Image 1 (tube, rainbow, N blue to C red):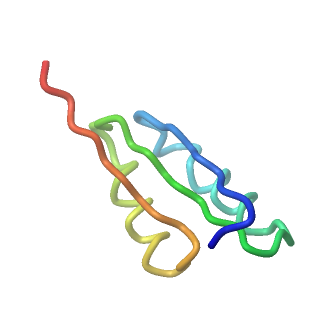
Image 2 (image 1 turned 120 degrees about the vertical axis):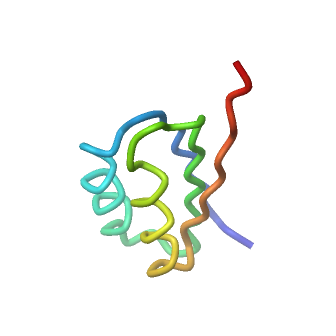
Length: 68
């Protein structure tokens, strides 16, 4: 069980998300769990996050689809 959970809401942030993910990953916090919540991005945000999750088991990715 995670001691600290970080939730990162996002939408169309492909230009800045890598820098944020790197900053979070550099933290020395033990038991860190990171949830990346994509609110239906239409750019490369999802691709970047999925690649990041593959390499970092403490990161999780959830995509919500927009219906309008």
